[in-house]
Length: 385
Image (cartoon, rainbow, N blue to C red; front, top):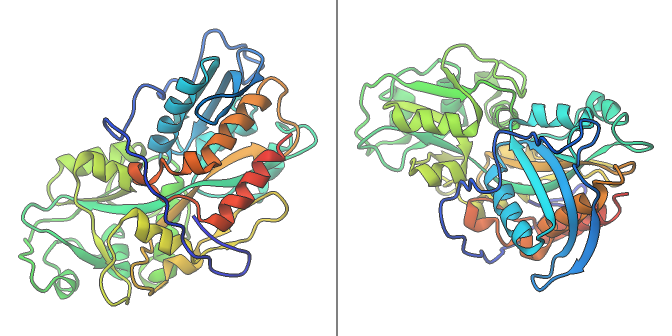
């Protein structure tokens, strides 16, 4: 992720640390965010305490915390949780991959120690957070970046190229077959069938949807008559729950197209669309290309809030800069965190923002934080109280 206030930032290349096994890890996360041993009036079932830095370089804390939200960052968080819990035997971190909207609701209700969201808090959500953050409020802490991949299922068609206009028309039901003239013009050498296009979108409120529709509004406003939002607004298409549900439906439906994070496309071997942006060549959805796109963004939050404006990324024509990107935030209280959850929350967020934690991202299909924003993030996390 990225950038400096009022200026574009250079992307940071981070060496990936190999992660074995499937990208979607099941050992550390589930859709059940409850725990029978957790009292209903606390986000943690037991008190937390720091226990010193271990051989992995992690300053461990003990205890139990609940968190929930974005499915976009699920694979990254589950990898981080696995590593943290292996290094810190007295810690339990339960991340429920629900949706950005649900995560913010849980956080503002005081259920979760932190939440994951693909979009920064709205002003009204910040106001609501003050009831959960005694003497403080929720802040946006960028942690995970990456491309929103456009996956498709069209046997015999490889290296499919589309642009903002054709994508907006496809998802708005204005382009309905794969051999449409607009698609042919972008793929002159492809044998495009007359197969009907089946678009797939999220049925739940999603920051991934919000970021995709921001791209549509930025790159092709005449072809996307709706405002960007977490809730899908266009008519038609088929809905599926969460990123995994959209990827699963695209995988099994010939003629389909959908959107989800790159890690889901990689895990399911779903081909992804290259985007014609006006650069010298269509841009592939890769972590490096996403970092180059995200580096166009600006910090627009104030104080310890690090909300980002990705508008320049959506319209970039820079070579190798992928334009359909998202940044996932961890939402936490700047002040007023619960005494029994603060040590473990702060310790875990410190680890995932560290060079070691960020080095895990590329191997899982995400983009690490550029140096400038990573420094700001570490400062914000260290100030949590």
